[in-house]
Length: 295
Image 1 (tube, rainbow, N blue to C red):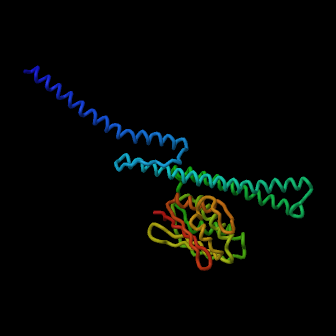
Image 2: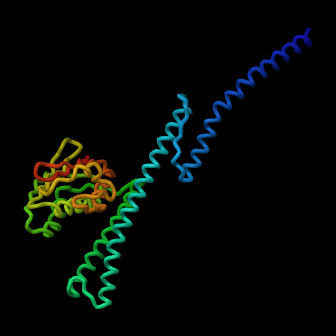
Image 3: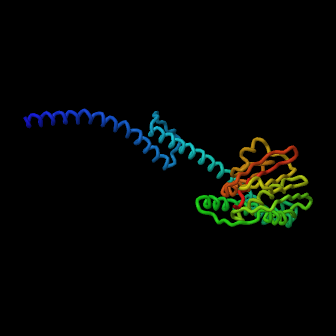
């Protein structure tokens, strides 16, 4: 009787194992096939091959994982396109002053002065060298900001209104005819004072370049945690087609001029938890920066 029961139990267990093994094998293949596909696609992403879209026709966890990887692929494509565009633009801008300097130096060697005399010809070379130096400095500073984005920045509490006054006093002499209006409330913020100095210098350099007759600066408290810095100039409006991309790296601006200054401004403000926006006024342009106050 025991032997009979044992044989029957063994047969039932064997049959159950066979019946369960086949569905388990099918389930395993169902689960692993998309994972293997994702593994191969991720390997391609690691090799910078991210043009082919990732599509998994599933609504379970694996399908959601596939959608997340597809979003990553799309971000990599956009980042790669932006990087290539940035490199092309910066290469062109770096090449231009170098070509001017080389051609003017060769002309001087040949006894020719493109600007009429040696002094004015050398002045052009000096201006192009300064432009080249500024471009390289901004590139290095952007790289530094990218590094700081993943590391804890140096912070200190300082008086924003006094920093604004100091920067204005240094820069206002570039165009003595401009009328400056400062309405600054005493406000302290917690941040990197040197980075905020760069923000103000780049913004005011932009205002000085385009203002017709005046620049207005106001620093007011928005609420208990933030303040608003408003900078206005009565220059020409910003073209609508570039308004959305004004703070991107190497955006082309008014009259085709370009640079990295506003991209640096946007990066520093973001690192400090602030926001920046720009609006065209009836007669001029306004920049607004939301600044977190020290608590």
